[in-house]
View 1 (tube, rainbow over the protein chains, first blue to last red):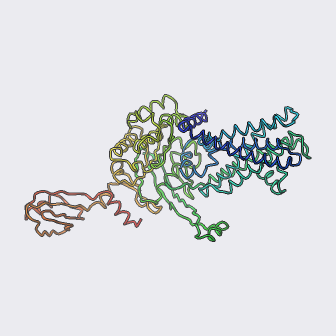
View 2: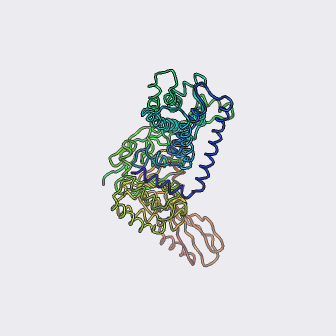
View 3: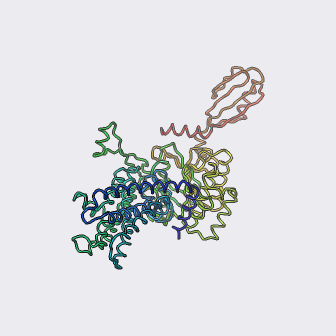
Length: 259
Length: 328
């Protein structure tokens, strides 16, 4: 498969800078541990937020760290799209007889982000071991869909940013507010926030669809019918459709840069 | 001969946001952006025949790169139509680009950190080139461009000239029908420049590839082709034979004469003395009927000559003249 070939090229490239990649990965894990410490200190003070205890929140932290870093690793092309435009890489992609989205995925893979992916998975497992969940096959499926939905939603947000940078030719801070802001927001259950903020991060930028809502299903919390919590990751994944459409529209308007 | 490229009435406008000055200007532009429309191409029409090498020339910012980008399907024109090998480049992009190769002189299409050979192998998969055909083509390109020692090196270790050779090979692995070269000789030393030119000619001859190249180096054009398209301020100014242009604008000649004795005050009708020192004088003429023998006969009747030489105006000067004439 063509993606494998690209993947091998990335492996070869980053092998040239093994130590560098490793150090970046370690640094990022340390930063994430710092964020984790903040969550822990908060809970030492307050013990719980509504139903939500420390381990539920830890699971949310694990999920968002995993999916965000996974998207940063494999959907890096959208995240750094302005760079692709400036360096003429986009022009080069457009003269290749291969789907553009495929090329954007295949062209940029950032292995140093995998450190955080591992951290996120480890944290998720620790949290799940401490939570009293009566496991059923549905709950396992929902848990899996949570991670998929997370990656899909984050990738979608990267795509919006990429589309906007077609016009600005630089990365915009407001996209960082959405991505990083959404990430930080996702460390805590969404019911601690202002109603409007909660709605935005449920219905417009569906972060809640891969943490607060499905975790409510796993734990059996919440006042809505359980099925709504269960299918929320599936519904949230639909977010990618408008993102792809928006990105494609922006590419049609692409003006290229001078030589 | 069949026309492989047909450009008819292509216009391309760019919308450039105007940057307002100062802090409040910046704040204002957040809410209301003002735009400036730049007409990069204005009603550009031309056609190119299959198997031709065409020099696409013009000063910086004339619209050369924009044209190449439209022809390679990267940009969509504002209006007008373009048919290349039966395709409209910006529609059916994936099918169309299989037939073209593009080299941007200042940008690389190969991987920075992996051996050149690996980049080529990836291109093999991207273009779905059958293994046998790929090996054959690569062997040929390696031989003609002398790449044997380079294939195992990563791109970052190569010199500019070596890089350009590899870029050319990379753009030709899938044997495109049409090759676009955007300033292929920029920054190359004399030897590499000659090698690249020879290679371009070779490919054109053996594969019958149609080649469109933009360049600022008129000696490229002189060495490669007799067909030029001159563009300035987004409009086609001249489309035709290079020889004709040379004939029209390149009539000025300078004649350097060394006299046996001290330079006498010579006055010849139709000749201007540009400079002189002790024994030599430089004459200049615009006369189209200039004939070396007549001139020598004429002057040696009166004076004793030791040596003389006749120089044509360089192609660069011709181009400079053209640019001034068209005010571009």
